[in-house]
Image (cartoon, rainbow, N blue to C red; front, side, top):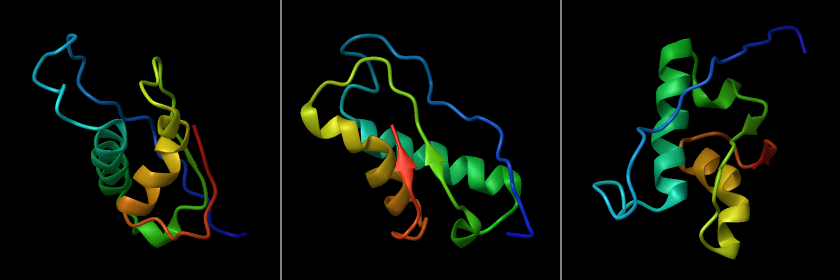
Amino acid sequence: MTDIFIVSGARTAIGTFGGSLASFRPADLGTIVIKEAIARAGISADKVENVVIGTVVPTQPKDAYVSRVAAVNAGVPIARPAMT
């Protein structure tokens, strides 16, 4: 590996229970955040080698894979690792 990109953190808006973000699935919010972080870094999604997403309160068992689903939906190659 000769080129290393460290993308600074990006986050979703802070919402309230049952508020305006209630209709968004966690993976959909993660996709928006990853796309924005990649855009801010000025790189293409295929240059991303690893994705890490933190979540405070997973709402469903499938939310354990939020980072994976969000990364792939944001255009990160499926062969890249992702961790929640």
